[in-house]
Image 1 (cartoon, rainbow, N blue to C red):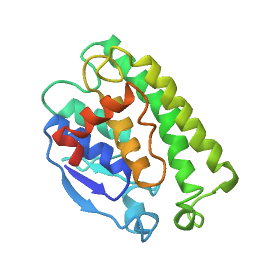
Image 2 (image 1 turned 180 degrees about the horizontal axis):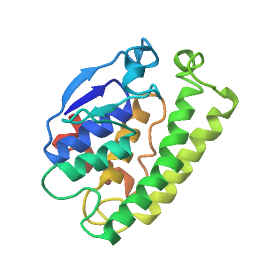
Image 3 (image 1 turned 180 degrees about the vertical axis):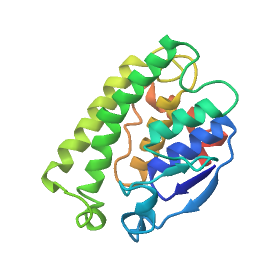
Image 4 (image 1 turned 90 degrees about the vertical axis):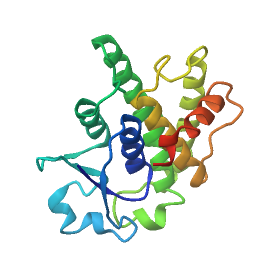
Length: 203
């Protein structure tokens, strides 16, 4: 399988997830900083112009990180990072959705609309005046999540799932772009340190 790869947290999510599953991906780097993802020939691969994108062994193209990870979970061996039962899968998808909408999206757009504005202002609609509010939403929702993780090693319970991979990669990105998470959060801090210590984190 080939992953059309780039800098940024979204490709990191897929690489880390694949590493957790023991899946080796062929990587083809696309110049995101130079805008190659918004031009041919990449737009023929993913018309949305977003990275990453997975090419399956039979040539099927799959974009969107959650869809890619669910596919890898199905075709890869070992324990599922989505869930072994319908209930586990429901819980994982619930937390993944909450993290994506409440933390990842506002954090990412907070960056795009402020520090990342020079790069993104010609590529998408940007709302600079919304940046600080979006960053605050991400901080508040992370604090909310922290309060619900008491007694849990991972977001959705006692084992790692895609929700943990998604949140870790986005918080690691936040640290690099002026949005470090609050290390006084009593559950998030040790969780982040455990995630950072996993071999897959450096994928």
